[in-house]
Image 1 (spheres, helix red, strand yellow):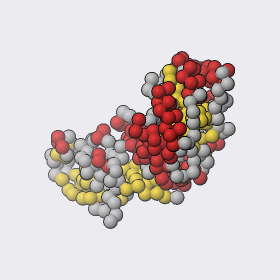
Image 2 (cartoon, rainbow, N blue to C red; image 1 turned 120 degrees about the horizontal axis):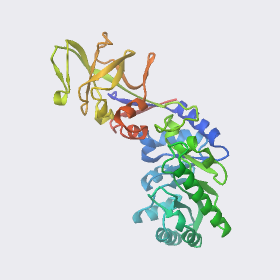
Image 3 (cartoon, rainbow, N blue to C red; image 1 turned 90 degrees about the vertical axis):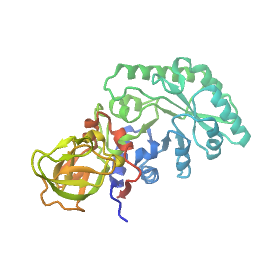
Image 4 (cartoon, rainbow, N blue to C red; image 1 turned 60 degrees about the vertical axis):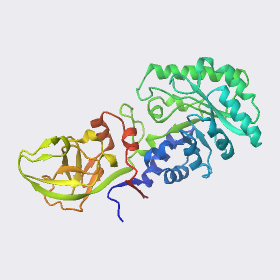
Length: 370
């Protein structure tokens, strides 16, 4: 049966975007960050596409995500941490393990010895994010100790910006300086790395120096889908890969004075032709679109009336008088010469595109186009 709501992902555009990112970060090797089921878009087809487009490595947040990608022929690095019960399967599957502290590194080493395997690892450095990793000013001694642990191949080291979405941010420059200083200290003690990275999507645009030596890898996530953080200076020609489409479930004439939706948030000033679309906040439409947002019907912008419900949304059809039940409704994307962008939704909600993408419901069918 046809799904009521489809999230269309254009893999051809995704591939083109990723090739542009590869060009942009060269000579750094690109790490495709595919956490949260590739930001809700479906990790397997996304992973296969970016691998074809030049990804050198996959990055994820946790062990279940890593396991999904372990058989695709590229190294998979966990960018977060490992919980105690995740260490054994990570070693077994050959996942690049994060070293957030010496105690965890010791446990990974013990498990690697037990399994008679050498485990590739990456030191996590907290250069100012305040979330995970070795605090940069105190990282030298534990990092050197990690190097001596048996059955660990400490191949990588990485850090993460906290404010790279702000162009010319002095704190980001401070983070870069501290991390580089640590790298110099470690090199002075004979500890070098095959993989060094700090840049993610925001920094690719705002801090290109984080894609130059000593860095030889660079992470990208939201950019590959053609989106940016609200404040980022866009330095690449990327295009959106997704559109969200549903259908008109009902068309009715309602009298002047009729109220619309929960809380009677909208009251019709005059007799109006209204439509009910088969999508609501369970499908990813932000509540912030209530009485404010638009959808496209037959190429015309149609305003949302009243509060968005879980499964349905009411719209005015005054701009689309020929609309009938079953007609396509574009919530995000292009129809005719009109378009609605995810950034429009993010602005109305007071958030960023990451939040919008990851909020698209699980009952929405993912449809892949080349």
